[in-house]
Image (cartoon, rainbow, N blue to C red; front, side, top):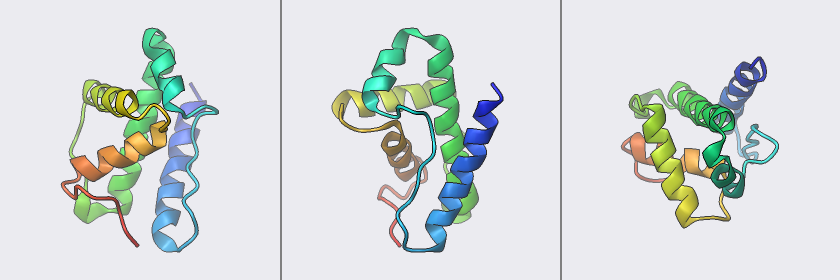
Length: 115
């Protein structure tokens, strides 16, 4: 489990760097961040828990970078429900995109972050 704190730290740094310049955002995460991988992890509690923790870390990074538009506290169940719906509707999407859309919705912004 030592990998998870490193992934979260890297994610927060990626989120912070996204607000600093015009370069494309480099999202760090698992080797396979696809919705296919999310859907495949349904019956693997350990993998699913890591994926949910990654999304919650992403949302924490969002809160740090966008303190005026913070995501409210969300449970692991809420994250799982949101990503299940996102990946069910957009099977070619990614866990990162699901986390971005969740930050859009749960921050009250209801729109993608613009530069």
